[in-house]
Image (tube, rainbow, N blue to C red; front, side, top):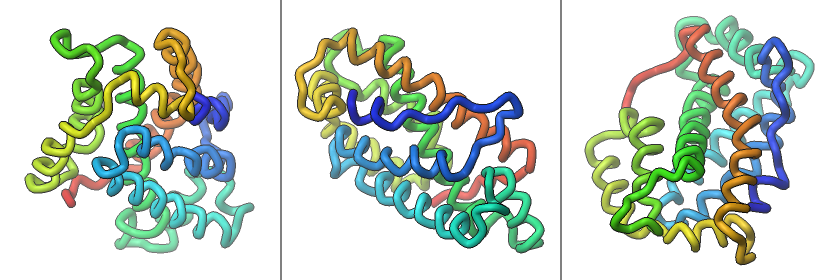
Length: 209
């Protein structure tokens, strides 16, 4: 659980604005999370997350004052890129990043809600599948969907996943679940706020990869 709890997301202010620098710092610790799920399965998602964080940070670093919040970035890029927006720059990178974050959010929530395959309670395929179908499936081509389906069978047991999440320590499932719930409070609020921002600015795109 140390992997998540050591790098908590900030509580959002009343206006639900997401500050760019703390957001980037928090998400930069998420790629290793996918190693806990089995690096071969989720290596592409992990690579996408790292790449998208790098792209957003590159834009932020050009003018931290101007790009103080994620909304400031989207508004500035909309003005800068005109007709090409939102399929450019940090706006596009954040669009894909938020989907990967939603995947993490739904997966962890499903896990702590106790959703499981009653015939194989120590498998996490049910939780990963739910997260994939909600967050990523509609943006993936048929071929990518089939690759994901096949890769699911290499997913770790829940006990092994929780141990990896706790950096190799043996921990009780109840203790782990409680820490995940705490992590999800600010994390879920942040992910939801980014989705609301894209909806408000009509910045989402539905193409598949």
